[in-house]
Image 1 (cartoon, helix red, strand yellow):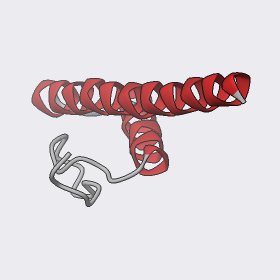
Image 2 (cartoon, helix red, strand yellow):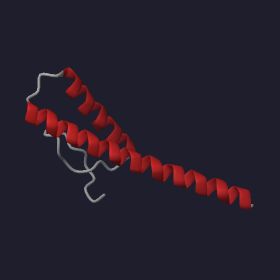
Image 3 (cartoon, helix red, strand yellow):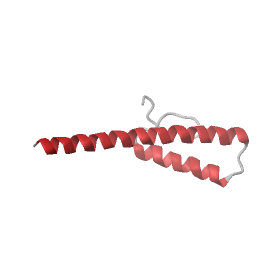
Image 4 (cartoon, helix red, strand yellow):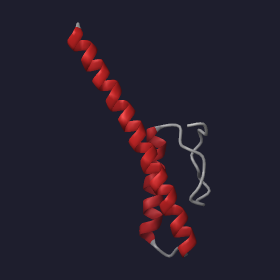
Length: 79
């Protein structure tokens, strides 16, 4: 992920968050805005797309963490 700062402009687009926690927090904000309603179709769609992107980022972070744990467990089994 080349861009490190989380988007805060509410446009539904922005740079990728640098950490799982930032991605998760931004995703929660996107969900809250969508659940609150009152948005136009274009803004809702942009937020939904951003939410999907953030969910994929969270999954990548979690997959990486799982791989690290599995590798550590495998090393421990070898010792």
